[in-house]
Image (cartoon, rainbow, N blue to C red; front, side, top):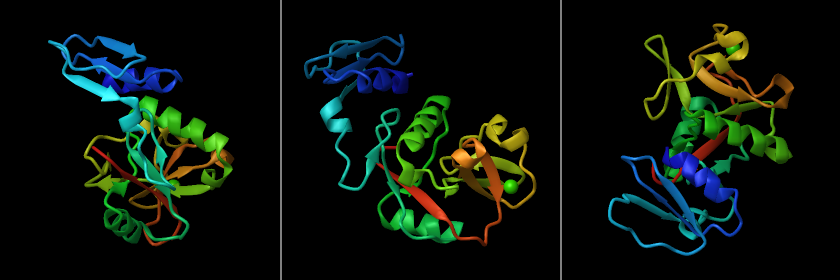
Length: 181
Ligand SMILES: [Ca+2]
């Protein structure tokens, strides 16, 4: 996965770029800005992927930028707010992205609020991220929603960063995401 390649790059201070071959899965990390070679279909320069606006934080797995709200909104209003900022509610639909976000929240106390709204919800009985991919159910508390509602939240350290279903009429802080989805 190209996201793993990005993760390797993000972990190395002198990484300037990655090259990723979609068909073979080959990843190479370079200390120079590379140019696309034959057979390489993705070249990402770290300098480019790290270019988030002030107040936004980069998810190194996806290359997208994240923003923590200062206000409290109900989920539908939070979604509108994220769209108005040029993005969407934040999606963490891979294990690597989720793991990174947990580590980040542990290290940044202002992000470690108890209830944090992110971009997923129940649609016709199925839990889906806002990009349409399925929510990994094993990360819910007790691996199952408890019937609180069809909206979605991620706990903080108080409850092990689990997913949880949430009543849609309550206002909480939320995370927006923007970049190339
Ligand atoms: Ca619940």
